[in-house]
Image 1 (tube, helix red, strand yellow):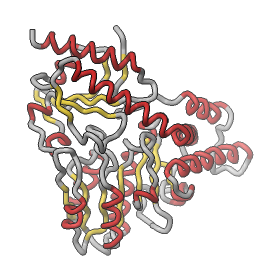
Image 2: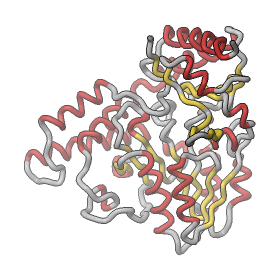
Image 3: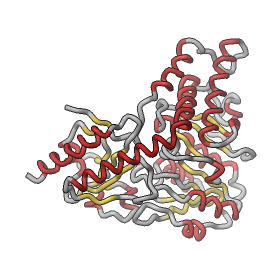
Image 4: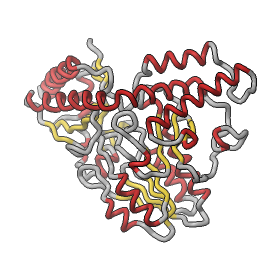
Length: 377
């Protein structure tokens, strides 16, 4: 059975050059970066080189990068840290209904601790309306957090426009860019954000490492307490090996951004058109233009996505519903977009990456066509 990986939004393989960079710090430069001797100095150099590379990808200063354990920690630190530091100014936060749980759940936690949160609706394409943001602003609003690109449907949000609203009101703004960094150009100056979250395993670095951009001059509260690592914001000896891998991946993606983006977009469209040309009834979920170049989320009309994927076990993709015990629940993102439960149950997300080939796309179309036919026998 041929195995094809089309779930790059879930995680990516570690890039070979990133793995080679990590190997240096596994075998040779294994010192503690806080140590003053030669072994520590070389480890520290690795961390700072990675910081420069991450900053280069995001277009910010190296000192504006704080390394974390991943996107979840970055999101939590931006939201909870802001809440702690700016509680005296207000207790209101604005976000959207289609955020990742790493944003939704910290917000819910804050609601239990005296904060108020506005969860903005989205349209049928999964877009937040900046006018809704403007209407939701209160004198007590201290933070707006809206993701840059949705992990399920790939819709890209008007973060730059929302940032202008925030700046006029003196409100801080955070964006979860875990899905967009490395796939499309993401520059903090163009987005106008104060905080931006990065997840290493979404951009060909290992799992367990990430980064948080914090605009220079902004001080937020810490979530942990210990020694003064990462400018006192994140105590604990740095994960040098994985930080080095993240830095190398950032360097690689910065050099090949436009070429990779164009290539994955072509393959994504090849998949979408291939399904249509094969006579398979599908409905696009998300925006037809304002979406990530590698992401295709479609509903297979009249088909349960779990059953379809079971018929094509060699194809790795994600469904639009989650199984809990003996029941299924439609995706919260698709539901927020106004998609009917029966259509959400038929949704599949295909996300492409560096290793995806035309042959794999064509094979996938044929496999889906065969699998779908069997479902109606």
